[in-house]
Image (tube, rainbow, N blue to C red; front, side):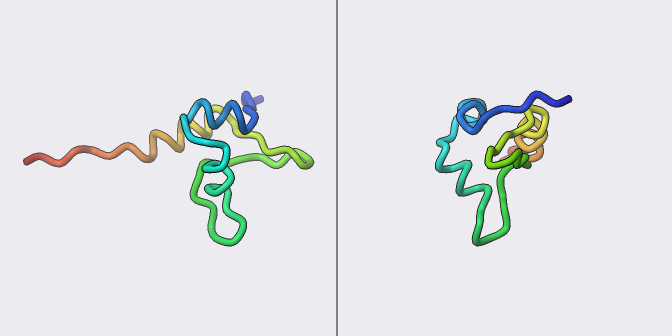
Length: 64
């Protein structure tokens, strides 16, 4: 079973605000943040999904 993090733990892991995570989940538009799980009324993030999402955003610097 994956380790599930609360919103506070996920925001600390990513070093973004809880408000940013909420915005990334998006209600009016397509979500653009990491995958999340709805467990009843609670939102949880799998630690491995956060790692995958961060790695997918790596940018290779271009040479001069």
